[in-house]
Amino acid sequence: MANILAVVNQKGGVGKTTTSVNLSAFLAREGKPTLLIDIDPQGNATSGIGVSSESIKSTIYDVIAHKTHPTSAISLTPVRGLHIIPSTEDLAGAEVELVNFPRREFRLKEALFQIFENYNYIVIDCPPSLGLLTVNALTAASKVIIPVQCEYYALEGLGNLLKTLTLIRNSLNPDLKIEGALLTMHDKRLKISHRVLEEVRENFPGPVFETIIPRSVRLAEAPSFGKSIFSYDIFSTGARAYKNLAKEVIESGR
Ligand code: ATP
Ligand code: MG
Image (tube, rainbow, N blue to C red; front, side, top):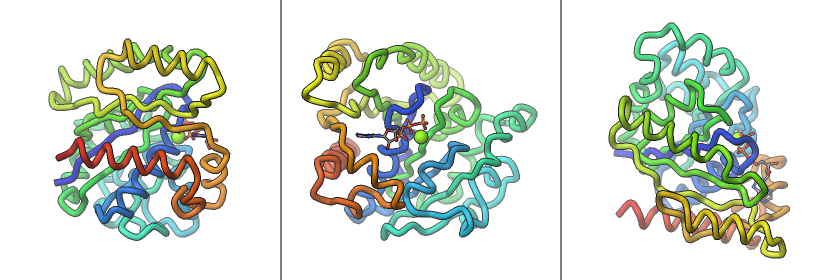
């Protein structure tokens, strides 16, 4: 049965997609069959892993809104052992459509029941909101990874996110756990990076990953070539960091 990890933070641009793509790519490289689910209408994980919109037949929208069988929405990726259920912008309408659906919070969970024994890991890249798509991800997930950007206002909104997690635990998914907060875009030359690191380590009410993701141009460039950092530049600091993150995730699951 797969470990289902939701990568979540309603704050935009904190490294959710970069983390989802590179973590799942490394898990697959380690021989763990992995499914990446892009549940963000922006479709950044889809293009970032090298799946072009022309090649897509069905998407996560079809799975959630039309109950399309998830196997027919799975696409292969350039990474061996990594599959994806892609997203396109039609998913933007789902947030509104879903409101009137029965068991609207469970649509993703029920879909994943049908395939989760085929994978060791399922990684869900969430949109920057706490709307119904994210609620579907949190209801389906066993654990969450929370990227926190080492920037001003980094901790703003974390309280709301933690409150949401509590609400989800109380009503929809009692077993939901925090796998860890993940510091991203850390620049060791900047005081602010150190301050955010200290604050999160002292005050975050849950585990914080040992691994810190550095700010790295190579990580920012890779998606424009449709490549994970391991195909784009395996010797970069970013590749090393995401490799370490994947190892932490694998070890914590034992
Ligand atoms: P959104 O909320 O819009 O979905 P996100 O949380 O998924 O955003 P990303 O898309 O992963 O965030 O990252 C935001 C931007 O920062 C992207 O341009 C990405 O390439 C860049 N980026 C992410 N991580 C790093 C890093 N460690 N070093 C340098 N650039 C990074
Ligand atoms: Mg994103």
